[in-house]
Image (cartoon, rainbow, N blue to C red; front, side, top):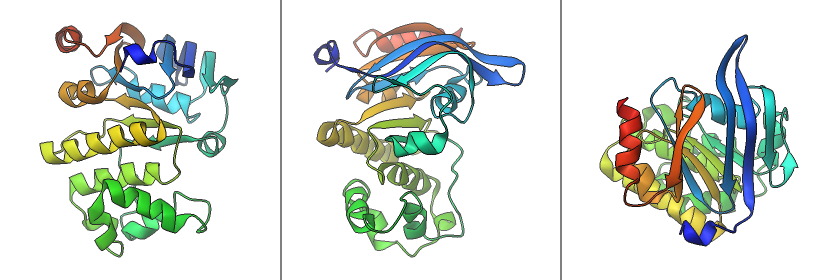
Length: 240
């Protein structure tokens, strides 16, 4: 798949992006191109800037230097609401579900209105069938794995063209990870969705990714295709 993407259109481009919190730079001159329809895995230890990178793309953290382009248009400094409306979806790590609301209401909140709710629900049922029978159940009563699947389902409700996912597999059983992996593969296959996947689970990430990069201390330390030597190359970076 990676070879087929060599001449593909760039979906998301970061050029020398620096960002952080106050006077502290977490990202330092990050440059990265992600191609149309590819799954790209961003790896790295905790505290290396992976979540900061996703939030900078989404506009939740402002870049202090560099440029971000999406589908050829510059989006540096754009508001998150505008970027979501433009087709960028986000599945965050910190599980921002409304615990006292039902599964249905959590999914419904992803949409601006109810006109497309039935069709959007049918789409996510295809990935996570258990949702269809438990729409009235409060999100806070779901297991950890079920909540992660609900987070992914909510991100998919808007049919994003670019999906940002932050360490969704953390703490999950292998069967749940496999279900999420299959959902992401199917989204790419059926809709051409481009996915930027922040992960520490190498087997999960490399099992679905076309390419990868390692972020270390706010910079890209290594990158390559998800080939035979990818696991050992990445593991060396994670152990240092």
